[in-house]
Each structure stands twice: as structure tokens, then as C-alpha cells.
Length: 84
Image 1 (tube, rainbow, N blue to C red):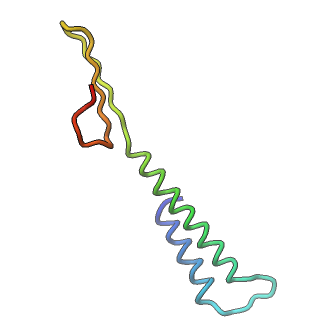
Image 2 (cartoon, rainbow, N blue to C red; image 1 turned 135 degrees about the vertical axis):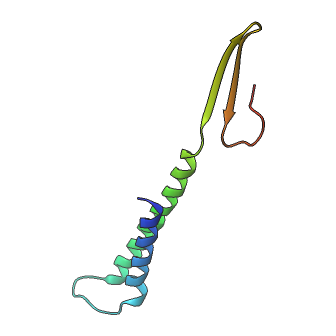
Image 3 (cartoon, helix red, strand yellow; image 1 turned 90 degrees about the vertical axis):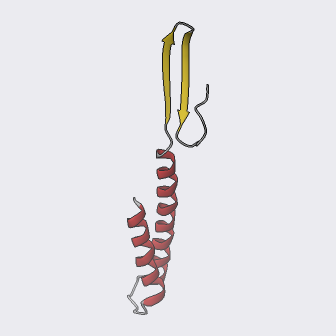
């Protein structure tokens, strides 16, 4: 579930919960609206968490030279210099 579909679920749930006053026998539209809003909110939170985790990358470079092997690591989360 992506961010757009999560927001759509929240909107549809809000419409069912707050804007529709029809009565359907055996179906509680208000409860269905609240369930859809909860599912959309959960999907939105998970989408944001997973997209933030996906953006983190670590690059390791190993170079051999006259002084031996040098290893450099860079992390996309930090703006500072690479860690030795």
C-alpha cells in the first residue's frame, strides 16, 4: 500500500463515517468508515517508515596501495565526511 492509496482509504472512510446518513439493514456504515480510516492510517505510517528505511544506503570502498588496504565507508544519512 502506498501513500496515495492510504490517503484514499482515509478519505473514503471519513465520507462513510461522517457524511453518509443512509441506513443499510445489517451494515453499520459508520463502523466501516472508522475501520477504513484506521487501515488507511496504518498504511500511511507503514509507507512512510518503509520509504525512510529504503533511502538509507551504505557504500564501502576498499583500495590497496603502498600503505596497505584502505577502507572508506559512506552513509547516505549523514552529511559529514566519510568514516575511516
